[in-house]
Image 1 (cartoon, rainbow, N blue to C red):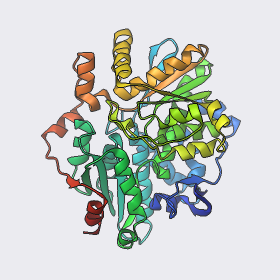
Image 2: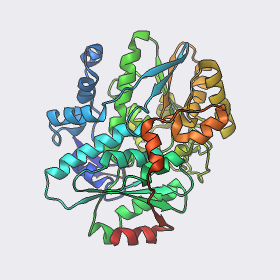
Image 3: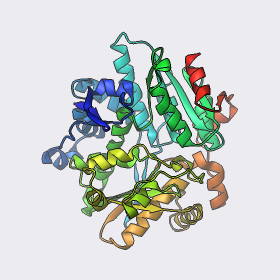
Length: 431
């Protein structure tokens, strides 16, 4: 499989190089040269496959020529070694829980897949040590840190916005040590993301460090996220209803991966992109004009993204045609007040504790199903409520039990490096 830059189709490379580089030399995002179509018999036999067999077949074409099938299957087994249950909330709504991995967030799948892929490439080359440079609005950093912890030949540098991630998220970034370094940025997530992109083009840095990114701009972080859409469909196919996914969206890599699964033949009827007040994409779907917004802090902080990188991939999937995109995607925005009300409603009606991000997905799904009552809707619960402990407990007036792996973080020493601007980041990377 070949990959090309979305800003220059002539800039092509293979999967391994796309993963190691993270972003194309022209700063464009890599995209597969073709989207493989899975045969009808694949979907007919899904229920008879194991999750790992199904996932390996779904991913195989994307790594062809770079990762042997036996190695891919081993990577899949390690990345998908926890459950992805769909929990009924009411008659036609379920919550797809993606937080049963090691860092209690959906990003564990992509982070672990990428870490093991990069470890495989690095072990089979004589290249210099690789520095994974990543920006996080909350959960990406913890998942990447955990996935890459102790991986030979890999150093991880994580940028996070000061005071704008939850306490648990910050602990997951700053207490690991070893090959993981956390940089506390005086700004918002978009500042972190822009610094990362700038560093990739800075020849002073790239001449002495091999940089790659573990944000969803990296194809090895982005593409494996399609797998839990396959897993969810497999568990819901017996309902024989059109299936709708409502995705709380920040940088839009998650929903974009689901759209790739749809293009491969997975019978997904429609997607709903739900944002907080950082609503660049819902606004675009209303006006046809894309305009980045100034980031506003919210209680769903992992979605506080004003200029989502992966939206250009979504446009490409649907041929850069506005009407085609609108036929597959509906967008909604919600305030913190509406999010709080939704959390209370879900808890009162179903006894279910949703985190603020899942509650935003639930809100959008309810709006959509009001006009499409024949469909079954799934909202993605992307992180365990404990990751937003103070917010959840205050809104619901209840205690959330801390998993043992989270309890242990509070006794560990935090270490981070303060960074004010890009010059500080550059100085750190050159040191």
